[in-house]
Amino acid sequence: MKASAKIALVALLFAALTFWAQSRPETSSKAAIGCALNRAELQDELNETSKYVEGLQARIVMLRNAAGTLQNPQVRNGLQVDADMWQAEVDHLKQHLSRVQTLVDRCAADEKVNAK
Image (cartoon, rainbow, N blue to C red; front, side, top):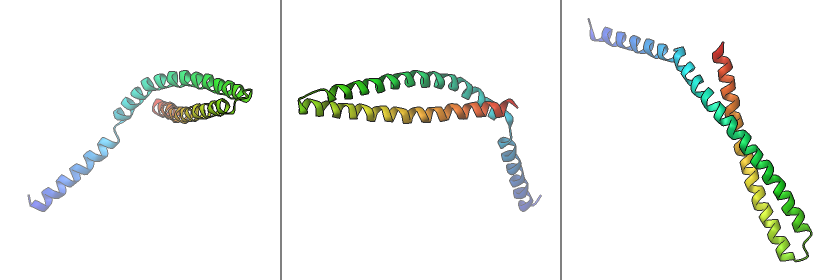
């Protein structure tokens, strides 16, 4: 067998193995099982963190209301700065929750696709 024929045969075998590896259903089903396990954990985390964020948001409103009733401008300004800092934290947590929800939704979609 000539060298060029050997190279062509190896290239053809490599292409066939690459195609076969990409089309294997076991790989996607293993990912779906892992996703299903993580999805439940992520959903629990989402629920807990959402409750925490709601509580923080209520406390920020209370803090701002309390600041509005104070006569001392330094204390009032300090409370407003504190409320602004906490609001920034709440906004960051809401962004995080949005990203986690996207992951949960993606896992749910993967489960539906792999179930068919």
